[in-house]
Image (tube, rainbow, N blue to C red):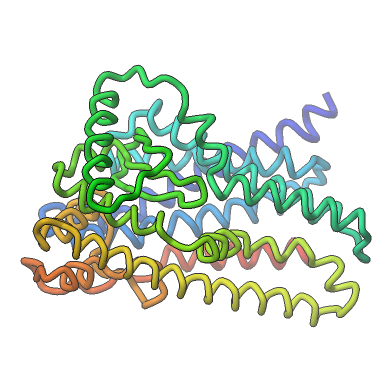
Length: 389
């Protein structure tokens, strides 16, 4: 009974409380979006983007306050247990807003997609926590070997090298089988015009429209929703964009991968602070910001190059622009994003680049943060200060 009171009940309270907090926050955050019914899709997407950002800061507040609660109740449990439970509560609490935003999300569809995301995210998180935990104050050859093995695991996860094992399973859904056959025909057309043939071409079943390339394993992925929204010519234009990413030199591909791993510089916080004190932490922050900015600039340049390839190779220059517009509209993504640091150019500018003037004026960018987002961010900051005090 003492174990039940001292561990299980507080963990259950944190998990359930996280879910309820996320549910309440998102019910309030989505009010402006709900009230915009009947407005142009660009305006609705602009409001929804801010609500989605609120979910990020609400999740951060949950994580910090959950750990604070466990600390104050003196629950001694491994972070490999407490963090997954808190994240599980956050994810379950977010289901209702995800379903409201995209009614195609049945619980089973949402759960399957979420579990795959968590497998990847928890894999990275577990490696990161593990490396920080075992990192000594002074690096030895053994410590360097352990760190190298851990970072190799991170690289394998981010590269998608594990996907062929997962995607190899037999597809039984007749509708998805037809999509796969259709996609193979589109790939054949793209190969005929470019001479490039990807090793893997996959359909990912999800209500979110998207397509992306995985250059390190020579693969292209289209989601089932993307195939539903676009006709063959539009899919071909998007495919040519992704093919251009597959053409990227190995150096650029590796730089992209290292950019995805940039946050892992903080695994060296113990030896850096032992050697240089607070200056060591500042050096890690500076290295992270510098490399992240350089990688983002490179990725933006590659996106412009891929857009040029899709526009120049499409049979009609408007096809690519309208394909992008359909994807953004179906995914409820803003046509103009806040700031200039996004990897992909603004949809509005991409359409203009393709020679198409949208049938609507340039939308205003969404607000970076709502009052509710500021509340959650403040709550997270206060919780963090209380943990450190």
